[in-house]
Length: 186
Ligand code: 5GP
Ligand code: MG
Image (cartoon, rainbow, N blue to C red):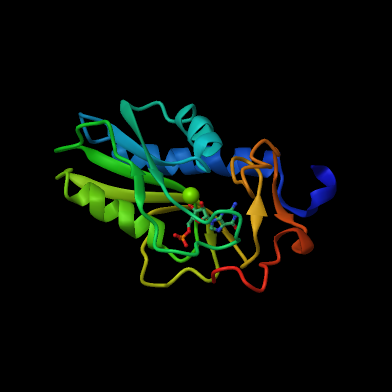
């Protein structure tokens, strides 16, 4: 695994410190709501981020999980994302915080945001651990862990072909491992 990583962008210590700060920002935003917050998390890349974030968040919360189809082995979302698993949670009237691992084109976040909106929550905030420099400027995200350049990152929950999720840092995958094939969907 280690030999597949070109360089570390954020070490586990840097991530832990930033997640701690983010949790404080989030807690401050939701302290006034008596019902607390409903965290809706997009699987599977966000699992470790979610686990660390919630243990730094001493506020009342519910957690819901959704699954969105994404790239399969390619480095970018090749097709329009689809919701594969609905939310098993009633969020009507809730203050929702939608969490994803990384914002790239913004299609995933936009899709889930629209789906959630239809369930009539009181409010929807958004948070991502990473935001790529190529993300469209018109996509507003309330909480951002780190801004990153347009490279393919793995680790801390993020995968490539379902591997590397357990790599404890956030690293850049060696380019020859993820270079799209000439016949791959764009
Ligand atoms: P978007 O819909 O914003 O283009 O893409 C967001 C989704 O694509 C993320 O939830 C993540 O699953 C995947 N993704 C985008 N960029 C990367 C990346 O650099 N590394 C990994 N592992 N996944 C990525
Ligand atoms: Mg994802």
